[in-house]
Structure formats: structure tokens, C-alpha cells
Length: 379
Image 1 (cartoon, one colour):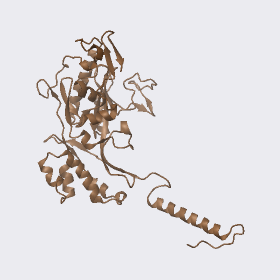
Image 2: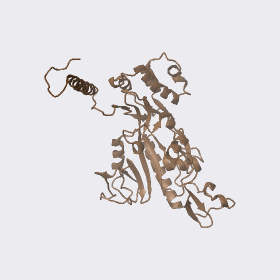
Image 3: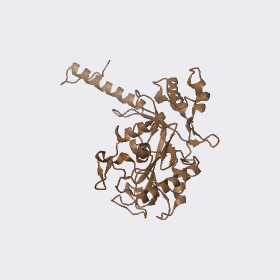
Image 4: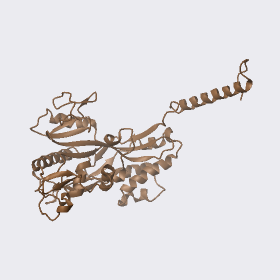
């Protein structure tokens, strides 16, 4: 390696050569980073494909994903260090796990000699969208009122299990309003072909006792791939806001400041419209609402040596640039759960979802009823 020859009285030749080599190496690093479209010491490039369209097939009831752009994503220059064929196989293998009982998918899932493009088209489904039903009659007609509430014994104090009745207060009017809100959502989702399932506290109540949690006052719904314009169209249809009806309110923040239902800034979380998250909320009263959390199907890779991931991202839980929230087969194909006399969509693996959110003891209530005092207490 040659360095410019010039006379330096204060430095000996060895020091001069060392300095030249350091400068040359630094220039090589800068040149490499520019070629990779990165800055020196920056994080590796974030690569992501997000499903642009997810719909319910009106003829079959299947949830179909448009896989447009997947092949281009798997073959793009950012993934050149890994074999495009291997990337495609990984994505197809995940889709095959969702279709393991589908005979028509066998030629793609059991054979390695397959047409990848054709298989992407064939396997681009997440299973059927469950239809919400009334448990008593097994029909899709949703009753106007909820069934009579039976207080689950899971909330009894362990030292008082011999008592038949739990005397702690349960706001049955709140339960009734929540049921009406759920029935409204079921109708709205059905008419607009929205892919949804219960989550968080609503899923916990359904799995644990098949009803609402007696000290919980809202519903939590996840929706897949719903477009912002769809939400805005539905929100516009419900305007203007009034407590005399069900209202759909979108993210009500301006410059990070929550706004009240009248559009005024608020500092305390006392107004149901004052939300910066989730993306949407159905409101029928001051303390009665249903939260709507959009979820997105993604294929992603973070950095050159990271494993290609296929799954679902909930930005409210993990942020837009966070790790994938769930694997695809944790949620799909959707299952059915019992909730307030109805059968509603829920994740394929509800226990995994609940353990992630509440820990391994999710079956234990956060509050118990002291039957002697008639008060709920924190466990």
C-alpha cells in the first residue's frame, strides 16, 4: 500500500504510514456505507412487505390476502445475501400450516417441485371468517337483549366457596349497554365485510367465563387490514356525535393532545372521545365503548442476518417499527368463542395471546368478591 510522499520533519516514517493506512480504511468504510445506503454505524436496513388488501370472499367466506408484490419483495436486492428460493419456501410453509387440512393445497405443501407463483395464489387464504351466532338457536340473528347474568364462581373468595350467591355489585345496566354495542359492531362488520376478532379483556372474559368481566367496562376488537378510508367513511356516517346513539370516533388527537367529543383539548382521560390510541372507538355512553385496534399482515426482515418473519403487527402494542406481535398461525384460522350468549370470532390460539398479554396466570381474576362485605378486592 503506497502513501503520498512528502517531508514531515516532526513525524518519523512509521507514524506517517500508520496514519495514511487509517485514513484509507476510514474512506473504505464510508464508501461501503454509501453503497449500502446507510450511514456509518447506522442500524441495518429495515425490510418489510405489508399486505395491501385483505378481503372476505363473498362466495366462499374465505379470508383472502392479496399477495401482490411478495415475489418482488423476496427477490429484491436487500435480500440478495439469502437465497430467494429459501425466502419463498419459508413464506409458503407458514401458509401451508394454516391450510394443513385442505386437500387442494397438498400439491404445494407436500411437494418441493412446485410453481411458487401458482402456490402463492392458491395459498393466499387465512381460512374462513366465522359468522357470529346466537348460541341458543344457532342462528345468525342476534337477540336484542343479553341473556340473564350468572355470576361465575371463579370470583368467589376461596374461604367462602360454600355460599351459593355472590353479593358483590355487578352493574347489569353497563353489561346490557356493552351487549348492545357488541351487537351493533357485529352488524356493522357484517355489512362492511370487516375481518375482526375479540382481544384483550374481552377475550379474557370469553375464555375464562364466557361473559364480560364484571369489573370491566369496555370491549376490545382487533381488525385485520382495515383501510383508513373505510374507517373514515363509517365515522362520517355516524356524525354528528350524540350520546343518544352509537358513534364511531377515530383517533381524536391533534399534535399529540387528546380532544373531547366537542373537539376541545383535554388533559384528563375523562372524555371517551379523547383518545390518541386506538385507531377507532365505538361510543354509546360516557363509560361504554368498544375499542378498535387495526392489525397488519407483514413479511419482514430486520438487518442482513435476521430471520425472515411472517406474522401480524399490532402497532398499538409494538409500534410500526417493532417486532411482529403474533405469528400468523397464532391468530388464523380464526376460532369461535362464547361471549354473552353469542358465538364470536377469536384467535386460533387464545391461550398464547392471553399469556403474552397477562402472563401464565391469566385464568386467575385480578379481583375477587368478599361475600361478607359485598366488596371487590384486588388479588
